[in-house]
Image (cartoon, rainbow, N blue to C red; front, side):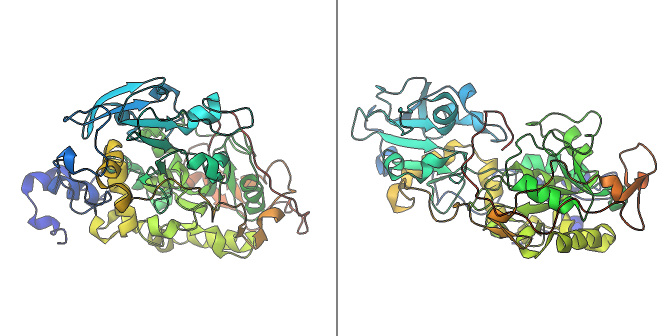
Length: 471
């Protein structure tokens, strides 16, 4: 059933969600207020999980503990040792509730818990259960009815290379990962109902106030994304404000990485576009905070990443897909076209002012998952088992490092200068405010492109990084 027109809604709800200071109505907040318990405008994402079902009817029963109150769960490391930046609601996983009766953290090697949960971040960054040859040395089960989960948030194509190994994945019963087609527990990055409503004022930033440039903030300078950014900067103003390919200062008072506060979103919303290329640009489902935070604040994401990203978008035309352009020049021309045409800009951002029933099912399902207790995914697997969810298996297929964008194959994207062209080559700065009124398009860019048209073909290898670098 579609959402009733605003004039027919309950007066209290209508008053609470009336137009904001910029004349915009948050239809998502209104839908949530009208259905605050079930949120029926969001489809089921847990295969009909029923929290009232008797544990005797579960596919996996709490047979190790023998409890009739739920499952005992052991986490191999405490939550503060998980690399969970941008993992919304992650802390709830470690608390009793739903089908979790008792929870413990620490050494699960000899634990008699019904469920054991192992952390990828503990393996990658702390060397837990890592053998000398890099293999995963998981402790054997102490009871044949124990159920072992592996929670992974790094892509199989980059830092999470162990996910491609059959000898590793065979040790676990189920995988929690961001590819909802191949993992049992869908553990993605993404927005929540609260974060979208929270960021609605930033999304309402008028077109006339948005600087016509492509913003980017990154510490991790892995190729090929940093190389592609430099190529784009030859044809459109790029504001690279992190330590990688730095050519512009960040807005004064901008919070640090890992902070999705209203202040961060308000300041970054002043940029019309955001460079949201993933460091694993060919892994299904790997769509991180870069694209979601940009979408939420109305900065059009210029994206290269998950091949199935269109399925997860609120509408198909919510982002600029770098795969669809045959050169950096063609992409730059499209961005200039959007930056000079308010109606064209609105065609990418109008979805946020529409009834959420009209958004694509994949995006609405993502919203339900991200807005639900993380335990629900685990409990659904325990309840339904292999009949509804895939067993742990190597993450192969996509994520192989081969891709094409802007007319270049992955190996052709290297061999560029250390810093991108300055945005002042395209935009004359007239004042110091963070506002489009301070920037004027030059009649012609200053200087010449920095990247030569012919470039060496280089082989992309596996990469390493330190914990805490930007994903």
